[in-house]
Amino acid sequence: MITIENLRKSYGKLQVLKDINVSFEAGKVISVIGPNGSGKTTMSKCILGMALPDSGDIKINGESILKKHAYRSQIGYMPQIGKYPENMKIRQVIEMIRDIRKDVTTVDEELIGLYRLQEMYDKRMGSLSGGTKQKVSAALAFMFDPKILILDEPTAGLDPISAEILKCKILKEKKRGKLILITSHIMSEIEEVADEVMCLVDGNVKFHDTITDIKAQANEARLSKAIAKIMNGED
Ligand SMILES: Nc1ncnc2c1ncn2[C@@H]1O[C@H](COP(=O)(O)OP(=O)(O)OP(=O)(O)O)[C@@H](O)[C@H]1O
Image 1 (cartoon, rainbow, N blue to C red):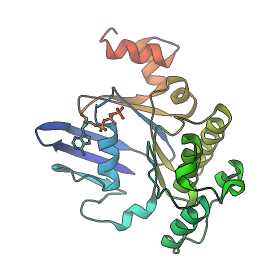
Image 2 (tube, protein in one colour):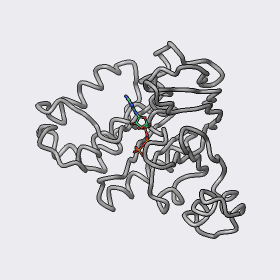
Image 3 (cartoon, rainbow, N blue to C red):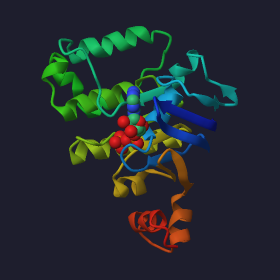
Image 4 (cartoon, protein in one colour):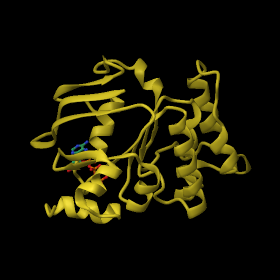
């Protein structure tokens, strides 16, 4: 569904993505991991068209997305830190986004309901706790039934029950055939929701495999141990 070919991206002299070649299939949850600063968000931003690659190509269903924008309506994005106009109420933010996406007839309000956001509709974005802001971001990412979801550390800041609600939603949408890319540092969470792990180190793909294969390769029952072993080069 998404194919990345020879992707390179620099910021000034810093080469953040060196030569990324990877593909992701529909109906899978892929966890993108890697040390801080390894290029995970930059790769997501290239897919989203928020960062322009220096070279290489990104294709969705075989079609290059570079210099195009219509494809963006197929992607739901949950940023690490959602930035919203501080004075707007939750209701106004949701109405504004709905207004922009008038083209979509099926609106998914499940997370709005599960997170009981209606009860807080008149609160201003600037007054919300970090976790509540995350819930608004999650609700918006899933709202227009996108074929692809890119979730950047989605459960960071969520309480355990709210995190569980999001994990269930991720698995439900996966079953409906969506491709979901998740950046996360929480191994237990990755193990719960992901099918594959792609690891970036210094802008290169260190490995991209199924969780089953990663564990088998390292001969470890726990994913965190298996990944540590592979990262340390002890097979
Ligand atoms: N707009 C920018 N201008 C200059 N440098 C940038 C920009 N965005 C990212 N970088 C740099 O690119 C590198 C990779 O950043 P990126 O945010 O992609 O890493 P990451 O793997 O998502 O990190 P983290 O786990 O901390 O979220 C970092 O060194 C960062 O400082």
